[in-house]
Image 1 (cartoon, one colour):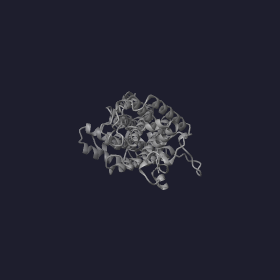
Image 2 (image 1 turned 45 degrees about the vertical axis):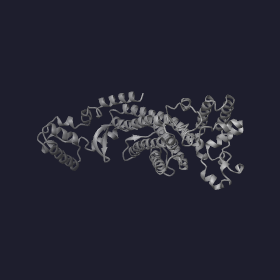
Image 3 (image 1 turned 90 degrees about the vertical axis):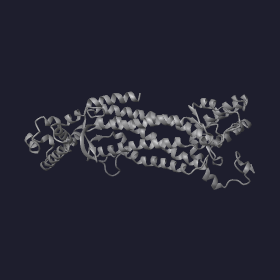
Image 4 (image 1 turned 180 degrees about the horizontal axis):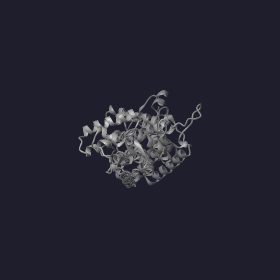
Length: 461
């Protein structure tokens, strides 16, 4: 009855697979994204089998020629994917057998789809982590360039979305640099766990054939080999770790997006986004909508959801491989594609952001952002901080009532609140004085920002 069932595993079965079960269980519609990685793994496996004399040299050559032909068919879009063959692996193996006959049937010697798919996913993710980090590096450099350009651009720093203390736009941008640098480092660190080869673990217990796993790993460029066959075929920690890292990247992009949406609005007008990254309204001709940051902010939810999906997928599985793991690919592929496109578009957009320096400055002035500097000034004059806090609070209340910024107070007005205040107070509470006074590692002074930019460039060379 095997002719009526799947030709690659139908020997055990007396009935053909239900047609809807075929559709329900098939993964070829999405796992064909692994096709070229599957061929890469098969080339390495066949080469190793030949070297340990499981395959003859002639059989190896026929297999390699067949795989090369299949690769050409796939890249040209001529390959005929069949849902009856379930997945990418069986589609390729079936086609290989069509091309070269008996040698094609021998390719699967010493391996299982379990270790085969685990290898393919690692090869896929290994490549894409490198691609994503290349885009992250572009974004990091773009942030450094813009921070250097805007190092002296004064703006309010916010807490609770209320103007808090004066900073520079450059300092603010470097906060995002630090976030994305951590993301960059996390991806680099996860690469070594991705770059572990499970091939040779077979279904779950290894194989009795005299395979050479070290040689296969060498051909495929894996740095290390899995140490336990059960774990190797069932492990998806590396995919979950990537999904977690991707969620953090998207969270950081979303925070940046939220600020760009706010800052580009008429209520703030802190920045202008490039027209090429915005759209208009079908009914309101004056609109310039910040679609890119809004879309990135929205896509964050799906990436976070993919992480939860993968965690939930794995939490109840006994060892070793289970069919549940077919569900690992769609959330992983989606996170890879989403994070790559979002980082790339930000890397392209950030260099074109224009700061509205005047509006940023006005906002910093209006927000009583140097109130803490006045309190620090009083502490240096000998007043306990809590008493200084009370004095400044009353001074700010007076400023609000009289519609005056602290910098607009006269010396007499200041002295009404505390007699220790002298004419040097005006230097202490100026925006420039406040920013320059924080001249320490991590502080706001332009000198520290330039140092931070230099350190940042060296850290991502």
